Image (tube, rainbow, N blue to C red):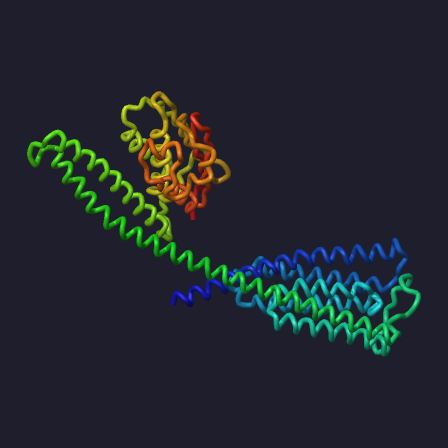
Length: 448
């Protein structure tokens, strides 16, 4: 079942890429229409070259018409329905382009028109969209149509439309020239098809290899999260029990303790508290990453901030820190995971308190802009070294100026970033060593 899901996923990725390439080809076709009209007008009115211009304009209109239909079809059809017919859709575009270009060449000199080599551009572009077999079939069709056109004009089966003012002789009647131009064009078409299709096939295989490697990494990452989640859960309960027992012993409920023994037990208690906190962070991170859907609820973001401030303030200790809160009174209720958003605020506010010295300041500012809530947590703390800034949101990373002075797991900011990004927002940081740090994040008013 997992292998089937993987194959379906790879197929969907390839189809999405093909759709993007078709959109790109549609944009190129618009440029081709403009070029045809401009080249016709310029040739006739600036260079006094004459040929049947009405059919050329009609061909340009025809190309623009089916190109508009293709664009409308891609934009309006759902991805699932489009993917079912994507191969036929690509082939249809290619065939219409070949027919249009063949008719265009017929009305503008046939074998005498140097623009016949534009078939090579078309071959290169479309061979990247088609399979190798389909690319060679396309090359055969182009060769049959062009050589057939040159032959029928040579035999006078089809009327030849000369480009008066361009050539003084009728090359299309020259058997050697017609044979030579047919050979050069068809051989070039097949050579271009060979190189383009081979390169496209190699790139596609390389993309498949990279995608398979990516999927394997995702699976390993998932297994790692499951393992960490299991181990963290198994550690958390016994650590909580150890903490409870230590509190009983240190509190003297199990008998009087010698001071040295009590001091040792208190040190053990601190280490156990850190391990319990570490296990809790690991469990929270694994749970957050494993959850596929957010528990979305409508709530007032001020309530989440008040809860976070209350919890963070209780851990501030005796620091005399001035807290400044500025929340836009017109903020609407948001639709988000309340527990996770509260945790994001709690972690950033607690960090601001933790790394701000006695007598410092912390600011919390929240506003709204373009459908997003913009939150800013700023402090006058110790700041972050510039060389640590690119890694600050990485799991288990701690800045060099705090790693030896304060305890931490290095998971809080990683979880915060994951929470914000899961809601469709972004988070950034500005910091200057010994002057303070500012975290700024956005979340949509209504998460999906």
